[in-house]
Length: 194
Image (cartoon, rainbow, N blue to C red):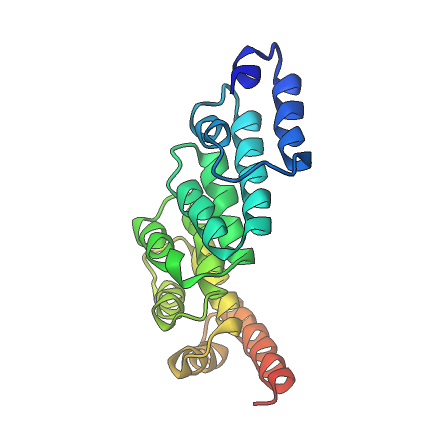
């Protein structure tokens, strides 16, 4: 912590943080990492602290990873929050569904990152919110199209029915995305043997 506080440049701080990954005794719960995620002087340093904590947590196990991701999702800095939400997509866990659903419902710039994270979660309520986003004409069109494309990951019968409706609908852009999403869904089901 002292070394990070007294480092004279961003590059020096980044090197110190990188060094944590090489230390066999380092833990994701190290106070210096957690506080740097919140109080690092630059976006690059805060983001690096999060990435180091995340990578250490992956070695430590599922509970450690969920704790780091939960902290990252609640971080006040966008760069840390968005990277954490992306990590939720890559490491789907039911324990983070509530936080991700709140982000989608709140809207804003993080919604487009949280929708894929929810789509990769097997939780029915997460997939239902992806479907609701796909159906909503009140969300930004780009977010809606993204949700339509992500319905390829759904196990909800209602989601597949909606893709069929769009595929035969009158909006050519939504029609195209719905047909692509349905084709991917069919391939995924075929690969799963269902």
